[in-house]
Amino acid sequence: MGRKLEIYPSKGEHNSLWYWKEIFSPYRTIYNFFIVYAARFSPSFKLTNALLRSIGVKIGKNVSISLGVGVDIFRPDYIEIGDETIIGFNTVILTHEFLQREYRLGRVKIGKRCVIGANSLILAGVEIKDDSVVAAGSLVNKDVDGFYGGVPVRKLDKNILDKNEKKEKELKREIQNQ
Image (tube, rainbow, N blue to C red; front, side, top):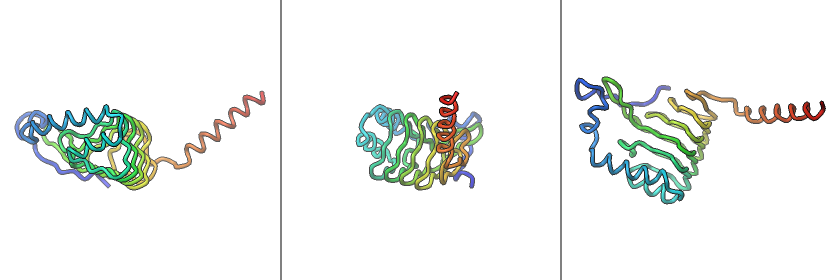
């Protein structure tokens, strides 16, 4: 299923980003920016979660948000993260897109017990279902339910890691037998 986005026309003749101050409160955006950057460098999950909750991110119990994680500064209140989820290092969660003649907003829902690998990008309007895994370095541009990875994200074989370990062991045996 496609992303769930609210689509709005640009406020004038220029690209839509040019008009961000007419769409969002500049004061709130600047405040959000400083809170997000403080959270990015916090070594404490509790402090990170408290900082992000203070700007509207809905965060469940025992969520682990790693160093460097960035959330949208325009609409952080559009982000929901379920209990026991892990968000990997340097991941970015966006709830907006500015295009030439329009801008888009979309909620991001990350379910319970999910694992989002490091350096992933989660775009506006997607849902990551409970117990899903997103491989490191992925571009999440659609809903996820299971084991996904890649750019753009696609469903992966759950057993791929076991298969790779098995191949590695076979290669080691072959080398030892030579």
